[in-house]
Length: 205
Image 1 (cartoon, rainbow, N blue to C red):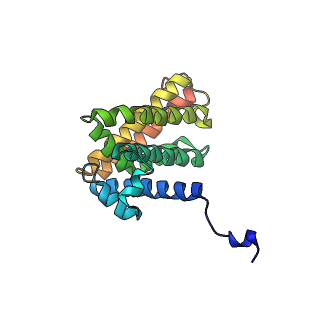
Image 2: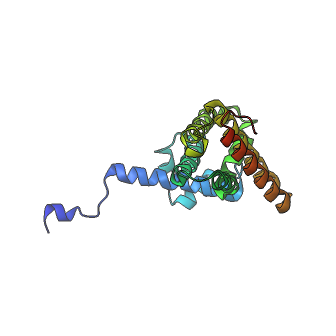
Image 3: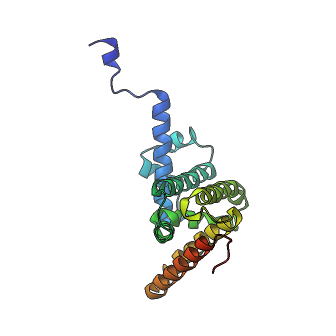
């Protein structure tokens, strides 16, 4: 076997490090989704990731650092989903936004937001992550074809408002699902947004 052949299939140290960190972040997301933020212990996360606690602390300084990395990954997946959607009619875009709000991974985002309300350290670390996520969502919306004729500030306000609305709906429906009302709400929002987009000034006709 040649020297080159002897290394075939072997990962570099950087690749092994990246894989371990990704496994820990994925395990953190899954654990929070399954058990909630406060029950997502490092022991449970390490077990799911197949990494020792010592291995964890070689890559993350604390549980907080790991949780913030998980929040960043949740945001990245949301943005990837928005970008992959491309230019679609407003009805499809709003339906997609609602589906993302209801996605299992978004429950992780909810858990972290609620925990950050009373956890100062988490709130300080989560604020820039949230700012980046919502800024990027607004930028994508401003550049999207359905909104091209609208004033950018109106688009930002509209998109952020509908994201918050669907997030709130997703939380409430876990306790009080009202499918008929939810469908009527989506239809009403689609109608309103289509009218606003056609007007272009930010005022429904």
